[in-house]
Length: 287
Length: 269
Image (cartoon, rainbow over all chains, first blue to last red; front, top):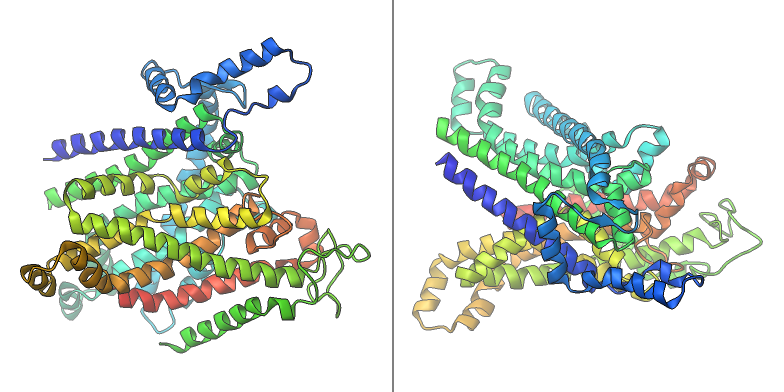
């Protein structure tokens, strides 16, 4: 059962990622200004040079052809060439991916940890007003645009990765708090309390552990949120990661780079979501 | 409704009133330059001082609030409408259309919202007129924000399809189109309303993000996002803390909307 789920998920991920790439490519192609090359404004170039520049881009005009070439190259491990940065896309991704993955890991893990700890603490205390501080903090973090959070971290001289954590934490806190509050009111929890179990044991063994599979779903949402936030954060903090690269690719209408980043981002989000689904399925099977 | 929510409504009402009456309250136009008072501090003449181009920051804030507060709900309305049509028909018709819609929703949701928004906005012309840039920004928000509401509306429609009154209407021979518009859509109203209200703060924040990155509303038109760009100059912010007023107003409005959302969440359930 788990194997068939794994196969199904893999098929779905690949198909969606490829569709994502096609969507990205189509959007760039239909965007006004596509095909305009700054080099064409160089008055020193003669007619033949201009013709050569236009011929370079001619292959990109037919989006189906471009995408087929892209897929062929992908199978051979060739991700294409970025015209705006004048370098192979694979080199750019290899250079920038570790930095973004590191930031995302810190941000997502930090955000999930802070959110879960605050949610557990507010449930454990359950005194009136005990959740006031986390509620205010999460409300404020939710009300700030990611770019503004990046600015605040920049002013403080702190790294962008913690800005990502601040974007992720309020979502985790609110979801986890609602989930744990509902779980805390379940009949088996009331029975455990009536039997005299300590409040920490009730919270961890009877509320938190059974809710873990549902909390795992947060991982996928958090990665998607974190990647979205990493674009303005990396742009504002001038961090040379994938977010900043995506920004440059979009501004320069760099089709090969943008398609690769779209496929990569879609793959990353889908893989994390699929892992959460598989974990949930495995948990259900074992229990 | 709790007391806090009443306070939130009062604050939102005040801000909306001030935005509507911007023409009366603002001492000058949002684009008028006072070259004798560049980066001036707050005074009786300029309540929030002037920016580095000598424009009255208070007037810009009022007009910017009008743009952000009017157009974010308009974009939310558009995205809810698209989501209702796509999600509602997918849930109602089922079959291949539902599978195609589900795949589309999965695709849109697997691409981070801000990434999609920045990509599409950056691909559109950047040298458009200010009014067109406002329209483009909020149209994009409306057209790209349909996926999550569509998923919820589709699920809501599937649930409603099994309800007694719809089964009875179908048995009575009501046409599918009438069933959809007269029996299904009105009963989806609480979900649609909740999705609308959820989208408003999301779109306000998205416009602010775009504005801070220089892809939002073009100069000289003000918006909250465009006004936040001033904050990139840290030294100036330290010396002129009143530059933070637009950010504070944005946070206050989004917080108030979030407080009201809790009521809408309960209605949606």
